[in-house]
Length: 172
Ligand code: IMP
Ligand code: MG
Image 1 (cartoon, rainbow, N blue to C red):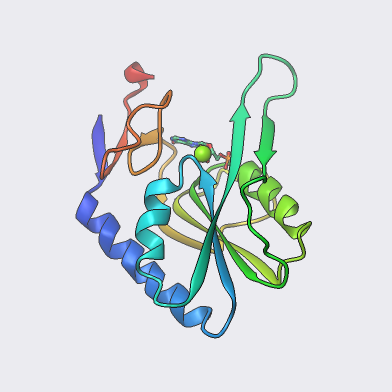
Image 2 (image 1 turned 90 degrees about the horizontal axis):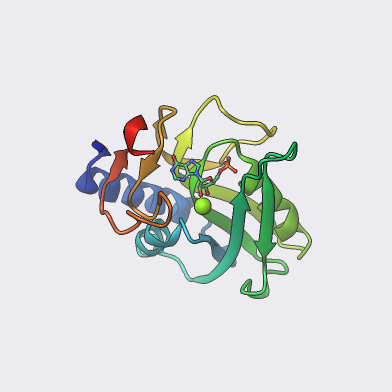
């Protein structure tokens, strides 16, 4: 495995993002909504750098790729989402790849009549989107490699690593 982004670099850029979010959401009732499970490490670090009153909630998205013609089946569990009516929602996820997960989550969240919905991701595999949206905030653009660490997994392993690493094709 090859380290792509060191732990101290992540901390620096996440803190910059937190300060930017604090400036842009001043005076708004903010709910930060983390997407389980990949966002947990990013969520925990990011919220501690946003110097504003805010609430934290969770939403779960699980996708699996079947062998049939439908390539992506996405399940959303919104039973953990707190009341977000008239609140500014910032959806936090680990990575924007095709964008299908974030796009579906945004549609679901809009159903609860929030004041606004924006997205923040740690990583963005630019150029791979299959939907007409982009993340509103991101920390690092990355090449099209399979990455793990800082919340991201391969078969549920590696989420605890404090840095981002790319797995070699032979490891996949
Ligand atoms: P999307 O819907 O294609 O944008 O994919 C988003 C989800 O796919 C993420 O929340 C991750 O769970 C997973 N994913 C995409 N790329 C990677 C990767 O390189 N490593 C680990 N998980 C990934
Ligand atoms: Mg995920």
